[in-house]
Length: 224
Picture 1 (cartoon, rainbow, N blue to C red):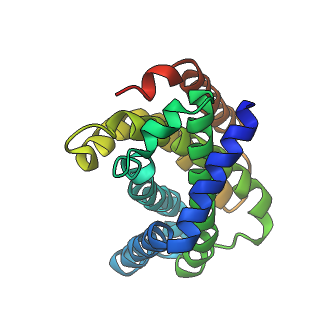
Picture 2: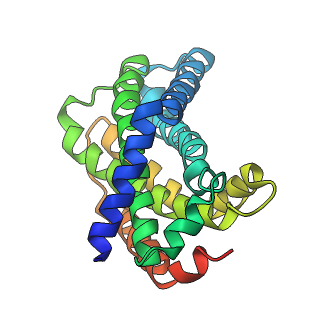
């Protein structure tokens, strides 16, 4: 079985499980919305302050939502030894990781599609003219968040306190990605929106490095 087909099977399983129960996605969306609304009432920002501080607040919400969403990626496979069955299947370990990454990316994309319009309304930021460029920045940042988060979720899956271990492992690694994503988003929220290609290239490089590393180390990541 090819890697693409095996990853598609894992992706289908993840999507079917989530959209049948809707537990993880709904919880994540509500959690992220609460963060954005609370920040809005706490700071009551003006239009200038929203352009200045909004990108950081938006990516903090994405980070918290991602941490909540990525933690069960491999942890829920422990209950019925599903991960052992996946490892015994005649498929590449990278196919398992790739299927999980694609599912997590879709879940995060759905959350962001709901969160960004609400954020724009609450913080009085017009995104009508920058939708395409903003989507590109969000996509590159989300890919990095999802790839790194899925990898560390696999590492933390066998730990006793995996709920605490995942954020401790993830936050230092994601710091450069978050800085680049915030700066790229801030350049789009400015009075004269412009896409900062330097930060965009950094995001793409981060994604490529971590995706390549996950491919090279996939055999070790899924070991007990």
